[in-house]
Image (cartoon, rainbow, N blue to C red; front, side, top):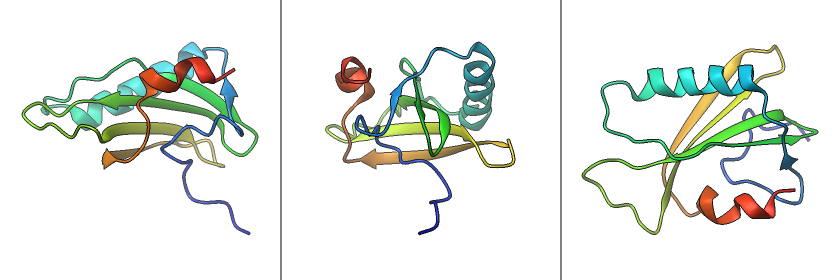
Length: 108
């Protein structure tokens, strides 16, 4: 079966582990996320970096959209490098997933 074109937006604690922070990767993802949300009032939460055998490092951050209450749904930006080493992001609004603040302690 072919690998999906991007990692899942939800953290899979059975297939991902906490990653030792890669400062450069995290910085690159934050810059890419900031460039996407520039001009929008979308405050970012605390990022979580995990690693998997399929995707390598995965950077995720939840965010709010000012003026819109999506609760209990979650907005998330996911960042990774594809098989060619190109940095990519996906942006998901109103997802039925657990917030990173709730699952951070479950990732080992």
